[in-house]
Length: 166
Image (cartoon, rainbow, N blue to C red; front, top):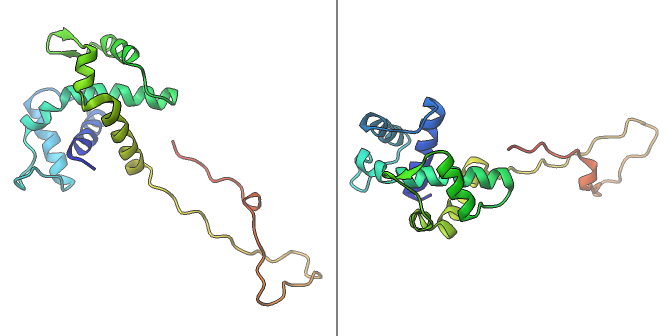
């Protein structure tokens, strides 16, 4: 994962913990401490500075809405849809409404958000190993057992589907 991916995970941790987006020096200091507790440090080996994390704030707010729309509808939102959602949530660039140009600068919306979404999805939902097939002896003992050295072949129809996580 890239540093901004870790910063975004800290951002979502803050949202989950506080129910609001980080704002102010204390909030970004808390984010930096959370990253340090996770073993994520800046290039000098010291905790990531609050000012570095603040530089990612707008991008995180945009990406958070983008990924929510993607997960809800199964496809990325259009720029127009995303701008409307951001306007509805009063997300601005300083004191002005966001523009398509702002979206394009936010980690290159077309490629960066897709990369992050894929990376974080795999981080949050690592692939599971399928269960190993087991042979259950038949209940009727009158049947003949399998000859030694031969294996019974199982199909996927032999096992119920695994529950999926969301």
